[in-house]
Length: 380
Ligand SMILES: [Mg+2]
Image (cartoon, rainbow, N blue to C red; front, top):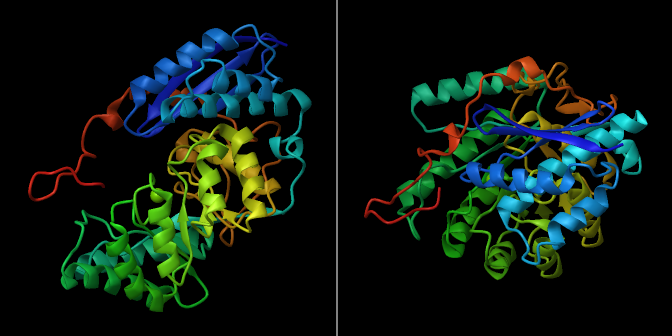
């Protein structure tokens, strides 16, 4: 079996897909969405296609090693996102070739269903926003019986903020707890936009409503700063959506900088690397909660690793079972869980008729740039 064609698709905002076709007609799908770098990833996939065409698609580890190591310079998020999507597509082909779900090729499932969390929060404290949040909560519970939700403080945060800013966020968090009760998990993503001191102060105010975790309290580059936050906070801290490969996670593990990690199967190195990162984390009693805020192929790839990793806690899910309208057979969420995929490969088929609406690079061109009131760049 040989790879004969590699194509790319841009059907939706924040959804870029890659399809690998073999000489015997098997098609494998992967996802290469990377916020802010659409042209770069497209170019990287085209470059890597020159290597992959004519190769045996079943030598997944060998191709991973070639793409990661053979260019002498290691790749950053552009190369790793391209590699991740191609890796997912190769696993999809392998599963279809052997007529089994990918999780069977990864060692077999260690659980019967995958626990997921949805995005939900109270945007602000106006009556209108609270009513909308209440409706959204009721709808999510009715749709999928979710028992875990994530939101965030929103907006821009300077190195320090006055009590009113902190209190507004804290009040929203406590109101969320009041609404969902004590048997539902609530988590908050700080989006890496606080300083360690600010994050510790805010976490101290949050602790009474018992969060499941706070995600990326500080930017991702400095592991010691992250550990400083963890050391001063009594509930779990998480990070990982912007970390690439085992080598980025190594320092997190060795310094025990967080409680949980959130590698993304479309950035960290695909299914191959996500499984290895999870296995490394097991040694440190860290659970994985794979990040996935993009499209349905990345999500389905995550499910197969989640199925096979003992130290899995929960999977991020944003589409509520619709597969973004791009799949012929999307998953269902029941009691906050998704059943294991049973079809060959990734187990979910892309509806190619839904790919004709080409969005090109729309999602990356502005609207996501933040400046502070003094005109300086702010993290968002
Ligand atoms: Mg995040």
